[in-house]
Amino acid sequence: MMFLEYGGIFAMFPAFFAWMGAFSEGVGGIFLLLGLFTRPFAVLIFITMFVAAFFQQASQGVWNMLPAMGIMWLSLFYIILGSGRLGLDYLIAKKMSR
Image (cartoon, rainbow, N blue to C red; front, side):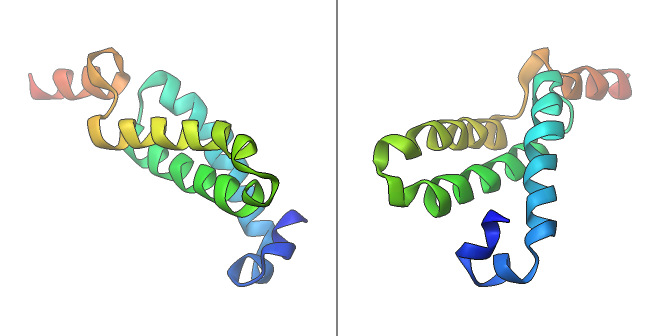
């Protein structure tokens, strides 16, 4: 597993971090598209992309870090602002307030 080379806590639980990365990218991406539980999944995606950019791609140069950093900053946008009026979070909150 690729997490073993990072050392520290990644070497202690490599399977857990591999599954968490896959979960946050796969399930989190779908939930972000729907605008459902936007902020929690944006936090998971931010952490996953931070690890990808600064632990995996940093040794290969800045150009390889840019895609992960772009998604990382986009997820920061969703952490701060949420999904907006087009997301299911907004529609559910609107329906619950009636």
